[in-house]
Image (cartoon, rainbow, N blue to C red; front, side, top):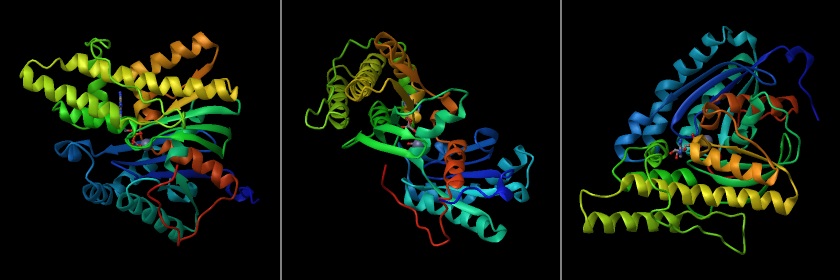
Length: 343
Ligand code: KG4
Ligand code: ZN
């Protein structure tokens, strides 16, 4: 196994993220000192459509990537001469969007003779906790809840992930976004539903929790989503103008959170692993964080979640995992392709 050469040991790493609707770049001094963290969101572009439009996402990455990377270097007060490695999200995500970041990373790597590493976006979410000042012991149960992925892992080492289960249909964040759309709320729906839910009654509606006995660590949110949408539609017909939006938001959020926490606790119990780490965009949901804290504390399980900014898409987590891959000599060549799937 090739390790980082001594020539590179004082060099920084440039992280680039373009897997969905955030163009992001970050400069990191390995292993975890974030010198800059720039995120340019395309929410305004996609909110009119109620979800991410892949072609528009690619075009906006193309438009923004130069200034985003330039700002990350400036904010860190470094130049490309100080960079030893470029870490780019290689997948999973939107192909056209990933291609922009990977091509840009290849161009920098080729022209400056820098190492290039391809980072798995979901593994980077799992790794985000290492940017916090915490002491983590392996193995731990890693739970990723985002707009594109919902999955539970046993994390045995920094680069050693065993997938226990994942969603069979919608991701948790996708369910938030779709329910919000039916309620007439803009994309992304998660933060707005989270806010509305604080005013609502989580017990007003009892929405289904899919338990999937044969594959207990897998998730399914499509039945829940359909049940919520049917409830909204029938209320819109029976009492138009008087739909209890806050109660629906709170009851829906409770069902999603309940199922995620329950499966994570089951994984902890079945494996005897006493630490759970949560991340991904939906991990910024206050109710989910509170419920994890509450139920883990009651069972003597240690629970960790990164600060909100590190839960949603960012390039610091790409650079952080990229630094580990670089250290272990796991570089990619200029012929590397992106991948749309794979957790
Ligand atoms: O991890 P992320 O930034 O991007 C992906 O990799 O998908 O996650 C974005 C998702 C969106 O579906 C958004 O609605 C959801 O995270 N989200 C939330 C909250 N903040 C973002 N969901 C529930 N509550 C929130 N506070
Ligand atoms: Zn993500």
